[in-house]
Length: 201
Image 1 (cartoon, one colour):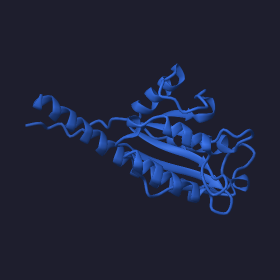
Image 2 (cartoon, one colour):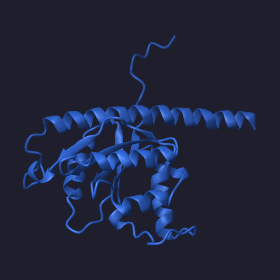
Image 3 (tube, helix red, strand yellow):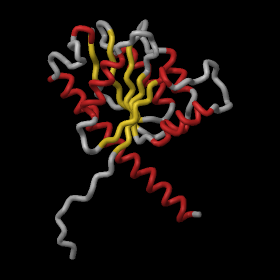
């Protein structure tokens, strides 16, 4: 009989935080730093910031994978889950983000994706709704709860801290809790599938 009452260790969930804006003077850095600082306080998560603006991806869609695409694909493939940080441009998300998503396929499959958005009156939620349809086509699991900043330029101070963080902190915790639940469940299911395939072989 095992009398060890210590809880089983929790495997860290590897989350790729995808920064979708490439616009000069973007506010994405402020929002990203806020989110990453909060997420990094958790012991059940590791973070890889995938900044679309620094990936050096080809302008044209190509079937030939350059070194930059291969490196990017490997980072997405290693992730257990994703958080997309997106602004809203003209009621949708940036073209640069769509291009980065479309360059890959299987790397996204059967992983959860959460969203942090910012913008004008809608707080970027129209961009998120468009992204949900795109990621659903890639067989991801979209997390219902989001973090949204309406007019973020007035919400953060000069150091990048939220002036009134309570609501955003609650929203961030809710989204991350659900994201990690799905990531853990899907990772276990995929491991079981792989083990079953080996037995069958």
